[in-house]
Image 1 (cartoon, helix red, strand yellow):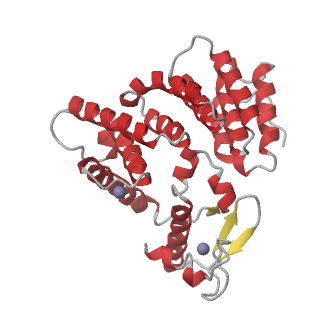
Image 2 (image 1 turned 60 degrees about the vertical axis):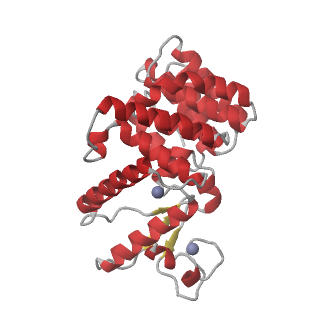
Image 3 (image 1 turned 120 degrees about the vertical axis):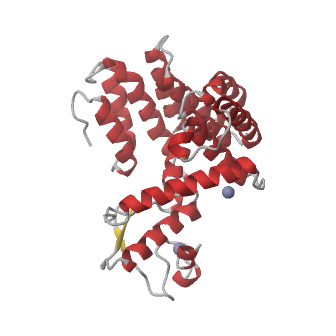
Length: 300
Ligand SMILES: [Zn+2]
Ligand SMILES: [Zn+2]
């Protein structure tokens, strides 16, 4: 894969969505890095963005040293700049340091980002992703809880009517809810609020997409799914089980809406036709019978 010349910010955003399905993601990462360093981006200010993306690609392929090199270059290119993009890159660096076992440095990178939790809509996701990678779920839970309290106090009385109304508070509640589930804490009032807002959001988006949903259903085999960065995993169902359940439910829904010849696009290539025989091997590759594996997931 050869990148086109003069990549724009929009190209980088698009690449971010598609690159993990590319034939040679690491080649793309290397090209992004040289484009950033040789001033071959449409806007030289995007060098940090391109290098951060290169770092995330390398991370997804477990090339930690390369990933750290890219993110260091990204931060270098940002210089004294200090904005949402730079903070996101710092969080990526922290996550990589945790993965590399350099825990103190990782924590030192994250601490200064903590005040952003109530200010930057994306901060809840990138800060908690980094802490979770480092096994610091308890700290994440504590930081998010305090940020939720602060955001609620700023809001004053009255529950937000929906996710949009909640704004940054929604992202805090959502990440906190996820982290608390991950460490087996039972629901508290904030979790209940998170769930109410999440349900309303899902209902609103299924109502608008239900009629038209015929897009590709991309299946991430387990190893690929587990190598996804946390935010990508979140977009694809959160957990491996969640990912399969979501695909199965959507397939059942499409079948119910009269669509035939349903197929699942396998990440990394190939198509799987759906549904398999009840007693046949499940489409997800678990080795179990379909009726014992993903078939029941559609009812979860
Ligand atoms: Zn819950
Ligand atoms: Zn299955």
